[in-house]
Length: 590
Image (cartoon, rainbow, N blue to C red; front, side, top):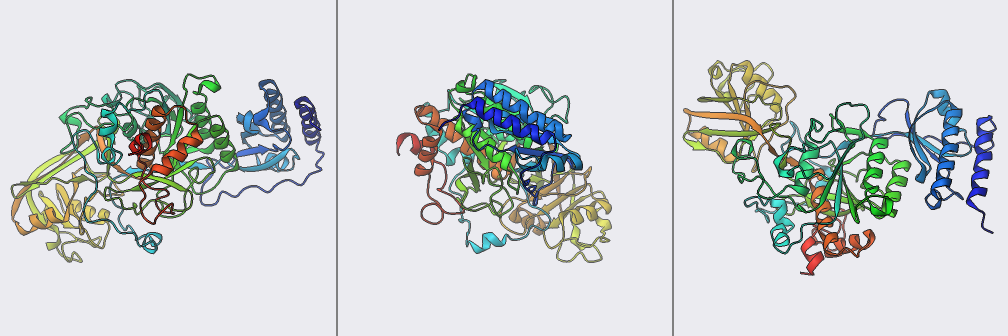
């Protein structure tokens, strides 16, 4: 026999009243351990109330409000402080003392209490770490890169655009017009010319940081959200000019995969690139609220999340299922650990996106597992960053201007021209031109440019030795094919740049010679990460949805996976999922 909602709520009232009076007739569930992730604060928790019988998502607004009030009463009765509440999933974010935590765990209406976990952005400036280890999981999968790229950049078309056939899509009028993409990230520089002040909506959900509520004022301190947004929405013919460009970049900057979408930004990650599960849930709910069915103005919403963490959250799963059931398509990065797929990408009702390079090889950092659904371009991706906050590097030597030069992440922004000196000619443990050993010095570097080979010791050690020797600039050249971006530990006032192996060895053979090294500001940068792959897939999904608006989110995902370019093992596999998203084939069948 069916019972009415009011009858269920009466039963819930009695349960909560008993709990408030200390009547504990049900054994409390154990708290969920945070695993490898940290809680955002020692007293920050998420609490989920039992949904059986109540079916919160099926309740009317009045019943939901009544139920939420009862749950808030239970939290208060336990001595907790309510910070966010999500009535439709019977959950809340709370602050709890140890005593309040124990009381709430013992409440028979509570299904679980878990930490409010920290989630982080999953993209970084292109480069390598000091002692980047081989990924054992990658080696075991026997994945190797092709010798030459399959996709290349041309004009405003990035290599990622080329991989997704964006020029053909644009020429056919497929730009995502009429579909919303709502990005959950670190914010956006709305003043960047690539966006032409066309941002449809913005809201800050990082309550611990003030003064971050305006998309046209400082809010994206980490630069991640602006980069992600450019991949989706960068407008064609709207770049910033030569002063803010990377070497060889088109004068109009870059173009996005879906320049016709309605772009929203939910700032759910703070200045350091991290945020809380609760804040991200609030952002996801705001994104879903843009749907007409939820009182908004958008017919279709794609939620793009280039973020994650290693531990599961029952509250997050409830939240993503709720947003999916409302009609949104949620797409998330699988993570950059070269290990298991992170959360939220690993949840049911979330599309997990891995990263490939321009040779269609799996990026070594890209997480793998059965939850990988699709892959997208995620290595050396050029996109927008907040105006003047990026870095551009250039270098020359012996009369040759080098074409692939990368700035170290903590390099000084400066320009220097002078003699180029092989740093490894010094004393101590320099050896083979690598300039290793913490006490290694070379007086010949004083007032000159240090040329150093990449090798067994850290970039930091090499740069510190050169600067301590009086070098006014540092060039480090790779010991393998490809670009050399570098991560450093300390900031330096001198320019520090990375050269390709061939350029560095070629310069070494021509010494003595003069050269120059410069690191200046830029409005665009190259990033790596599943964070970069995710907006490619999110934008592709929006383009297809705009072309086929009758599809549900489930039907859209089925179309995207069935038309993806199969990579790796035949069929769906743990490295590439169903393959590289192919919006043109999804629309035209070709």
